Image (cartoon, rainbow, N blue to C red; front, top):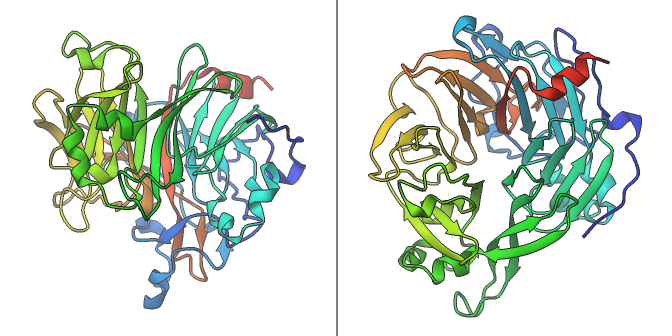
Length: 420
């Protein structure tokens, strides 16, 4: 569905090319909005006063302050850091922020849910969904943002709506060279063969054309059911969110010679409730490859240039520990990991992301802690980012950092900003 919307008002943070040395954070219009977690780690130079014990049970903020007294970026070894720009989305608002390696803000995109779909914003529960779960930046400055479980919007570089798709869009998307958009989608329903009395969320892959029109939908449940991997469905819960698919990557075919399942156009997905990575053939509508392993509640599997898979393993390392693993998809053997061991502290019970950088480093998003870190192959932390969006009387809540993505230093949109 296409929705026409007027351009945002000035206070909605239309694009600003200004780049102050210390980023200035803007408080959300309604402090009850967004997604927040009790803060655990803080930069050693600016530890806030200790919060009362009962505060840690609060899942969302009841007050907001920008916490400008804390550093955003810690450059531990600048020479070892992969040069580039950083794009991130956070639980503080429906906003994407582009910054350089020093934490200097270059640009923002923002469009509140209440302005895009006012009828949704009238529902009290929607206040806690006032954020973007994932964003995709085009070279010309256009941007896609996912309102979790609600839809997808495309903005131009000045945060003006180009189009919006209303649906169950959630977690992830992938954009092809021709502009075709693949998104995760879901629909609540009764499926008698799964549960005749209680509703379930059925996950789909929805394909949109460059203008946001739906081309087709593919049921991931049906893809598993008609595949040799149907036995994995024994792992899913009896009702509710039976799959919780959280990652979608369209394969480019580079590794089809190693396994025909990895042919161009097939889809790599991560199904959290099954602890499973899978490859779907969208033409045959079936799962053609699947693997389980030591990981649990995983996020963000992605193919690396050498054919290995990188993923964020949320709870497989044990209680209170997460890890990022690089593994051989043919054997399941782990060839590198960070986290889950003394001295490599990492934990996000939910969410989490990882990206292998051109210099061999790995950029990790420790979502629930509001932190991103860049680590070398020998496990040295060379760069850290702490989400400056804090809440609570003593800054005891931090906005969830859904994902930080490193873009090339010469990304075309940077040139457009600096030429203004």
